[in-house]
Length: 519
Image 1 (cartoon, helix red, strand yellow):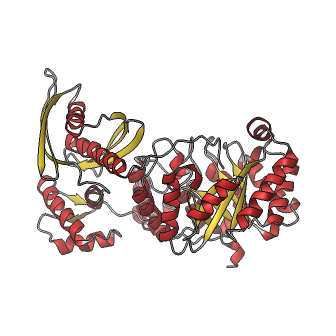
Image 2: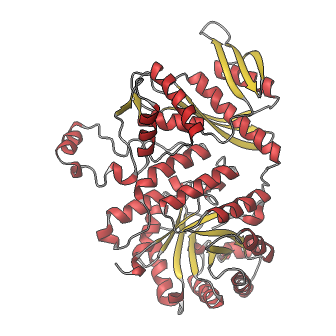
Image 3: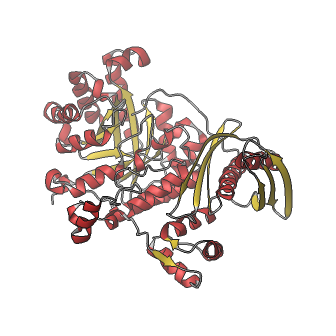
């Protein structure tokens, strides 16, 4: 297949995805996601907005040092200080890309920027030329392109390409476009921008009307050769184009689109779960490609058809996106080598210390559950390999609760060599536990969100709890798993507490700066 038939995948999970309220990740979590994205085979990783804060700068810089194959991009406004920050953050990158944006729609030019069309063109050209001093790979995004005057948009694109832009991105910033309309816009750009052949046409769609994936695919059909997307479709407001959906659409219907990507699709579910864990955003069961029900059939007619011939009701296999089965994999008589081998099959690699901890948890779980599933193993590993777990550790928990009595708990935590005990009451056992943890740790957390889901089926299934907690303005997520949902709740809260303690220790507090809409 010809080189021009490859669609580049530009992943912005670490930038636009993280802009979703409550989805912020710390530096280590971003690095884990970046490495997972490189294993996935994305072409470009947009690692952040370097000028926005020291935290974003450090994250972009760390990703730039770590990533070897993919290009690493930093977002900037058409402002010299933004471009300087991005250039410095991206200095260690093997393949740096500076991504410059500037609004071109009438509503943005008049009300936000208060600039004339001529001024906008000049600012865009100057920004691209300045960015080219630091990187040969420069992308330009005319923000709110789908609501911009077409003739003016053509003029801007021609000017920035002449100035050195190697990629021009056409954002549907507020999710306003319809697929036919958006596809036509891409075609019109190809037909009306004289030097468009010197740049890759990219698309960046938001999902406000649920059309981000459809719009991106319509653009590809009309000549776009880069899609900007995020894992699980997370992002501003209703989110962005879902990477897993556009990739599998183009793969499954290669006969229709006639394009390929470099994505290693069996890695998709692994990356999806990692992003879900670090952001605290649970993937809906009915989510296409990565949802828990995506490959499950309950209808008798469907079950019968799939058993006779899978393609009757499955247009892609679970294995093609990395789904593992729900079969029993290990039991209480299994040894450490068997556990290590099974984890390797699940693409999970642990060092000896982590393996020993996971094995102890596995044995404990075998005593509580009749069946241990792959999802149980994944939950064990995630629980044992949380970034910070050495500040406060749960030692024991005693809960007294009922319909006619006020819930009472006794929580014992350990920090270093010291143990601390607190008895507390609350509106419910979870509330009482959290009050006790606050008293012991000295942190006052405000619970913003609490969610629980079973890891597998059955009455003895592990419960996985995800929380969002506000600690004096810092929004922190936590995850914990156990067959006891109260214990899982405390572990999730402690995970958030420990993240807060670590952040406080290094003084890592993200600055909340409003730059208006971004592509």
